Image 1: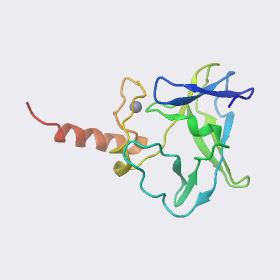
Image 2 (image 1 turned 60 degrees about the horizontal axis):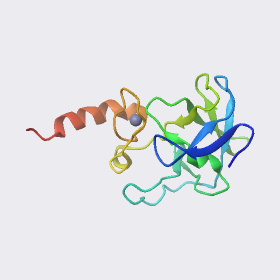
Image 3 (image 1 turned 180 degrees about the vertical axis):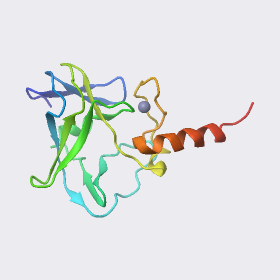
Image 4 (image 1 turned 60 degrees about the vertical axis):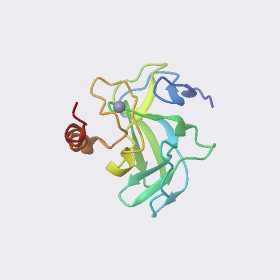
Length: 154
Ligand SMILES: [Zn+2]
């Protein structure tokens, strides 16, 4: 997919990524993240499988897996440059810039995964403090403690 604003191409993080084609200012909408919403959590994904169903507001999941949703290529990162914001009036989620984004920069956001989801989804975002799993930011300190205490001794 390619529009004036974003394009999908191979990412150093994983698979295809979503990349800015121009600069974005903090708070600016980058691209819609579209798909059907449901009040049921998604079926458990296969280990390591791609996940596109995200809990967009408490108790509401958005399935972004459709090929009509180019934003599904946006990767998770531990220090993302965008966030997903649900617009209740439009019934549409938007990838929105968290900080200034350069043209050609990869667009990333926090998938907000639970601890259980994180176990099947390694993170390779490359941040210096990458926790190594795709997991919601508020849960990372607990995961770090867990990983420290469960590491095999040698
Ligand atoms: Zn990471």
